[in-house]
Image (cartoon, rainbow, N blue to C red; front, side, top):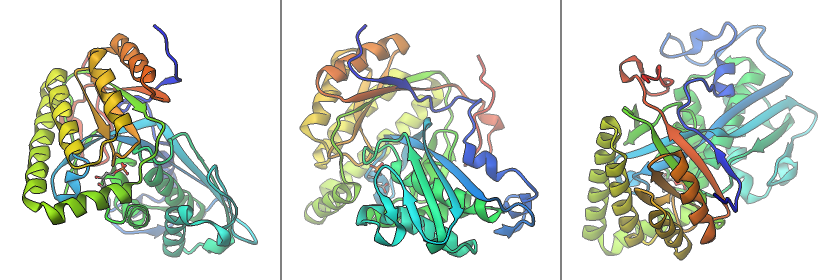
Length: 373
Ligand code: PMV
């Protein structure tokens, strides 16, 4: 089996993996700040550090992108091995080092605005001077490919600032700060990404509310990058403009996507990947109808189906970015990835969902329970 592109595993529900940023936030004497345990944002004596560290992971939307903006549900899978990390320390002047921009904070270009928003919002809340820090960002999440790069980077920054200040933020507080940056990045943002990059489990998300999804069997997915980037804001605006002209048709598509999403929740819960694939296939056609697919996305979807995927669709806002395919097993994943690469995909990854012990979960940020096989 030949792979023309790097093919990595970014398993989304390995129960052993721990998000470093989240783990960090559990250390120290700051548990009182967790709203589940009582209290709000709290300053913790003695916990401030010289270099604050934070991280968060990527995500892929299984179903419900775009329709989620209009109140329909969506399902999102965590990609724990695609990580954004931030480190921050106090300095005489503001400076940022990253793949997208390196230089003074004050001279950062427009595409850095979401990061700056997360920095300023969290610094203000946590008594850190945003203009007097050196911030270093690293990420293995491809930029503008619908895999959660902007939300994960913002979450990493928020966590790093909190770590520097010696403050424990709850998931809800982190979400609120990340969401401020997401509004800058996306224009209208459903809030899905900001939850997904903090969640260790698949989530069903609707109208601001995340709940953990039951997974009854192992599911294997392949993600393929078309190598083209899509602008989330442009795609969301495009759908909104179409809705202005054809509101009844678009509302009907949103309703159909909502039904497919809940059918996938059901299919995950009974362990039926074939049914998941059928719903994904239908969803891709509906998203294409909304105008957010592209020739490159359609070609990669078709190649995946031809190579034996149960179903494939664009994932994220579209107009470029990635395709997600559900496949029978790991071996078939290699064939599907090779076929996607043959029609132009520049990178592929495999991710799998393992069954979770749903009864042990406390949504929304619970880790996956014990595997039952
Ligand atoms: O940023 P992306 O490409 O993962 O897209 C986010 C999903 C949308 O539904 C298109 C927008 C949103 O805010 O939910």
